[in-house]
Figure 1 (cartoon, rainbow, N blue to C red):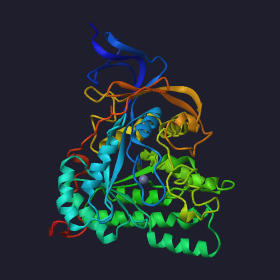
Figure 2 (cartoon, rainbow, N blue to C red):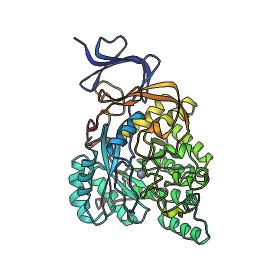
Figure 3 (tube, rainbow, N blue to C red):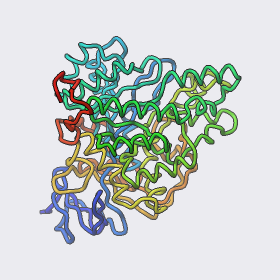
Figure 4 (cartoon, helix red, strand yellow):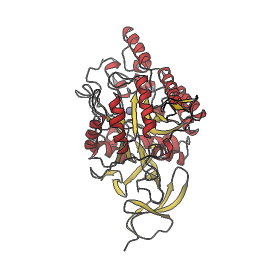
Length: 484
Ligand SMILES: [Zn+2]
């Protein structure tokens, strides 16, 4: 009789704190033993010369999310989860969306049904586009209790954005319910002012998308949401910090002791505004918000990762095909940037690019890589210690990496349902060859073997990390209406 369901033998295990030689014993989908020379497994994987890392957690993914207007999200959970696993990711946090005037409970129920076909585990943030009083006081308390413990708000995009007054109500609600607010922070009116002026000046090309949204529109808004979070004593995560000035606002808030966390995305580390200026209409493939910035901004973000200011790197996977009636080119190859759907895909490319550009090129060490791709997201979103690490009792969500393997990223390799990747031709060193979700192979030697429906919904209960500090800048607690 075997001692374990599965033993991963002779590998080098890394967590966010340690790197050590060990076998990993897995039974019942969990890690049950970590030591050299473990007894026999019913199945064994030889990991000699390989890295045995926690499966990635991509906490910012738009999979199968309906969009307003004529464009469509290319992925289902069947294809999106396959692509994630190809890139070593074992858990995604997606978005359930409230239609304006509608119910968020309805949006959650619809998205749960879509996600049932996922091959990997999943949880949701709730996008609040219309935080009316009954949503805040009736629907959200119930949904948070059911394990949907994070809200997303947008301060830009017509049809999705909410006002500062509404954002404050959402933050106060999050504080009362023990939920985390994640924010898309850009100065909407300033973007609109730039956009109008650019179109009037005859500057409508994809590259002018970045001109419409200079760094200032982001850094101002990041500063503003940090002030709001400070005034209400509410923990927040700022989504997709794209460059130096916005990251500096996060750092300043952290220095004041605030629970403000910053996320960046793969694209802001390796793509730039120059990509928006590729010949013809190719730049459309790089239209996302915030816009890709400059090479010095990329270097600044790596530095912010090393200093621990930016702690989480996600894909913001938002796949829109290039061709077809619902694609980026649907309005024509001379469409103004205002008509190009925002968002780029990146589920599979995220971890290999971060490993190659980060670890292989010496910008970060292996524990930092594990932290920014898995462990920090697990902690921040209430999934630790079940997810995001390799420890006794944690789920056996594991990616086995060949650290020397050289791969050229192509759309054929990526495995999602999009028709292009912005990382086409990108060369990486290091690739996750096998991906396990709760001990079950979802990708084996580069091939998708996991079944749709293997993924489980991860409800998230209350947790310490997002407890408010109990510190207000003045003598009054405006959330509860009492002296601070
Ligand atoms: Zn997003």
